[in-house]
Image: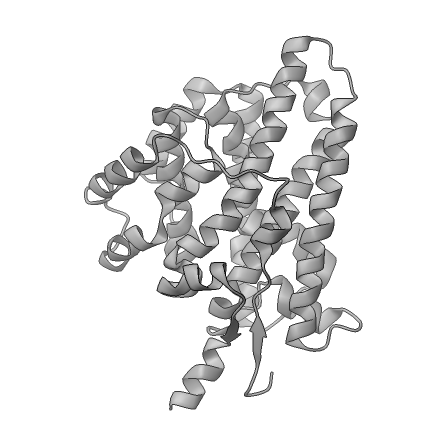
Amino acid sequence: MSEDSSFQLPDIPALFSPSFELDTNRHCRTVTGKLQEWSRNVQFLNRAERDSLPGLQLGLLSSLIYPSCDYTQLFFATKFLVLLIHWIDVAHHLPYDEVFDEIWSALCRETSPEWQNKFRQDLASFRTNRDVVLQGNANSTTLEVTAYETMRKDSSGVRLLLDLLEYVEGFRFPEDVVNNPTFSEIRECALDTVSDVLDLANYNRQQAVNDNHNIIPVLISHSENVAVLERAVFVVRGRIENSLRTFEKLEKDLSSLKFGSAIMEEDIHSYIKGLRSFMVGFVHWVYETERYFGSNGEDYHLSPMTLLCLSQYRRRRQ
């Protein structure tokens, strides 16, 4: 990467407008306040994590991606978000603690055994793939595109958060729905979309610490005609746009299928609406949280701006 490496962040919210409507849970403010009180009493957060928690805006994130659930479900989902960020940033390898035990007990009370088995499998995949990420960064290796695309949906924790959509909304889908190819494909499409959005937002931060677990360096290393940063960013923008079109097509296909009862078909319709909120909620949150752009997220949201890669900026300051 050259010393003047920089890129212009694409206007991702524009790709979602007007087809994907943004909504916010009515309990957002209450949950955000309660989260601050709760965080002062948990043992797994260190001082730096507690100090950064307000800027992460995790209460807002849960309210954007789960906009129609009740307070209790929203608060549990938000606590899990705090734990997930902790696992990613600090100590994903630690044994379960009392916070996860509390969350897991709540999940088990309101979900089916089948969902619980799937969540446990996805949690195990998350932990395994976080180890792969750490090992890859230690060895300065970059996965090829297909392998990376498969792994990041687990290593990012996004699949776990999508699993929680069924918990917070009380969905219980039978096996014929869960195993339906179109139903499975639209879930994966939502995961791919969010993963690309997060990789775009996170690239500046990751490359500053030599973290290659991101679609941009993967494309630069392993794709033909993607040899420079700006081109890779352009390709990722196109990937997001294509995923949204694919999602809309799958949505139409799914609406034409029959699943045995009007109630089940209404639940599937509500679930697809939840997937829409899940995707667009992440898009708007990346500009509100300080995790990716510090306190300048709103500036990047309102107008196209150029990001100077942080590692290059640090070298220039030395």
